[in-house]
Image 1 (cartoon, rainbow, N blue to C red):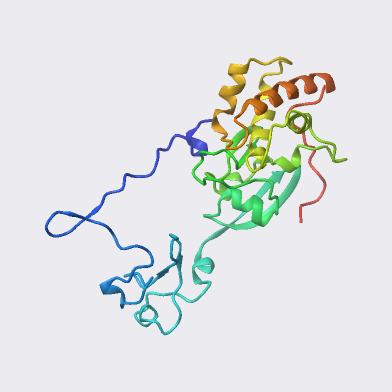
Image 2: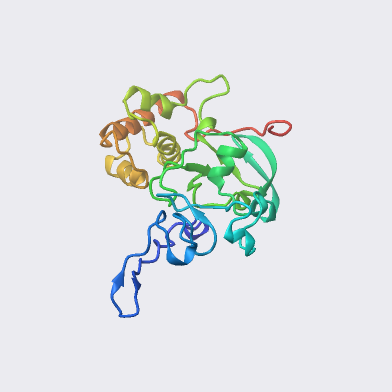
Length: 260
């Protein structure tokens, strides 16, 4: 497994360059809600005939009859989605096989959340930085916001929903986070749980080194706890796993049939 395969280490966004006027002095680009002289004079109307929501970067289709529609720049509602190619994938998630037709540009995080309704996978930064979207891909932690769903064809994934036992008993890592108060708001917790599960599988020592724990957690961000309770939870989880004799990463047996 390489970092490049999963989208790590690809670098940040290109630096922003201010627009220059004819005299060579910097000028600020018009804001998304400002009227531009060549946009028909209507606030929010961009030059390309698409509307931008105030304060947002998303682009919406213009209404029929607008200048953009008359010049053929706009497409009917839903045309963009309908035109996007789709591909059939088969993926095992928490031991259940799913076969789906997915848009080729759909992110794995969106596939899990919206197609499979496994909303325990959280989306935070969408840049692979915060770790909230971490899932296990063939047992290894990956950022699902950096991967496309079509890349997961044939993969075995584990989400936070797959940690607890079938009878809904908490996994030792989950129990340790509960006992040690390793969470507050809980938004980052699913990513931490899966990262910790993989770490303790690879480091089965019941008393793991704190420096190694902090290194393993360095790719997951928490704005609530200050990390001390999370580190304590990892140490507690290591002891619980040793006592229970269960695998840190659940070994899901393939279920019969297919997921809904």
